[in-house]
Image 1: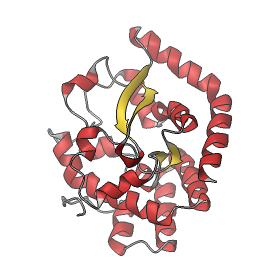
Image 2: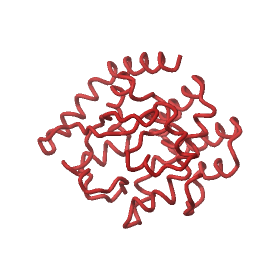
Image 3: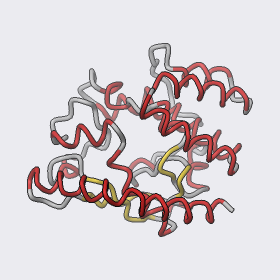
Length: 233
């Protein structure tokens, strides 16, 4: 049922969004006359690699810097890249990955191999499903770049401040996943584009209704400063 929904929704969305996708492609190409797409290896279900496609928001060969986390002030981000990243437009083209079966509409975000190589036993549960375009963590930490802005070592800050909670939210989704929950998360992803505070408030209520641990609910409200912690074991 989930796969059928992925195929139908992604196909319809690709058709409806085709004018927007073409416009974004053109704007990125005209900015530096290089490919508007960025294709990168990611780890899918059961740890199988696949090629994830997204709109390129950084300068050409930015991935060769060795940095995997990106702050809002990262100099590799292009002017048009700031715009598409802010509104998550760079991920729209991943509907193609969903249609192919590499990804799902909803699920934990796909990680790079170096990231999955250091997964704890708990985090390896994230590889039990197809990775997704959106999930709880995608909404809660949609301001990831801003969180990492003050830190010179974005990767280290990500591992201590964001990764532990992203992993817990991802596993929580897997434990509770259903078609109804998927539709709710897709809707909240759209709400977040219009009003992030409203989306966070609704996320808190959704987590509570599904019996999420209190600390996970509290962090997801994003009303407190994030404190460094270790990834769940």
